[in-house]
Amino acid sequence: DAGITQSPRYKITETGRQVTLMCHQTWSHSYMFWYRQDLGHGLRLIYYSAAADITDKGEVPDGYVVSRSKTENFPLTLESATRSQTSVYFCASCGPAVSEAFFGQGTRLTVV
Amino acid sequence: GESVGLHLPTLSVQEGDNSIINCAYSNSASDYFIWYKQESGKGPQFIIDIRSNMDKRQGQRVTVLLNKTVKHLSLQIAATQPGDSAVYFCAGSQGNLIFGKGTKLSVKP
Image 1 (cartoon, each protein chain N blue to C red):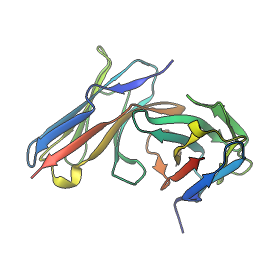
Image 2 (tube, one colour; image 1 turned 45 degrees about the vertical axis):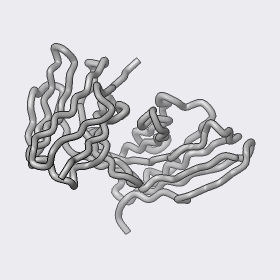
Image 3 (cartoon, each protein chain N blue to C red; image 1 turned 135 degrees about the vertical axis):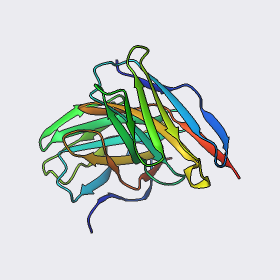
Image 4 (cartoon, chains in turn red, green; image 1 turned 180 degrees about the vertical axis):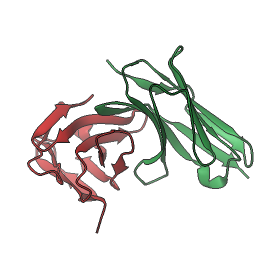
């Protein structure tokens, strides 16, 4: 199916565990983004990527790692999850104009 | 650093009235300014954008105004409908895409 998909939709993990959130898009968009959304903070940019093998830090990158070996995939890894990383995570992609971004359905992550 | 924020956290309007949602920004280097709509339980959805060298852009029932002098962006929704109830975010892009905190629009029948 065409579009952008995130997996899993829901995840509960323990403090200290490594967890990877997946994002896959089928449009061959050059840009991909990871955001976290918390009450009172809106959407905060974690990392973004302008193309395969190119990634940049966003507003809140600490505690997260990304990679982009293929244009269509942009996984986000929490190397050692903390309770403060409990959030809803959104992945998005867009073309080179970086304007009309398409968002996935989100991953609700709970760290206990 | 770059920041994009909104003046009001909530806005309540009567069905059929026009809505105006405001946004202030600090980074004049943004290439685009964009408005997104987010319904409960869903990801944000693109509404309309405006290039930084433009003052006004119209879409279907929506108009975005950009005032670079005071670094202000607004979204006007004509004849607001119940389906317009959502959280609205402004965003600025300069390679990245930075969002403000959002305004929750409630439409009263």
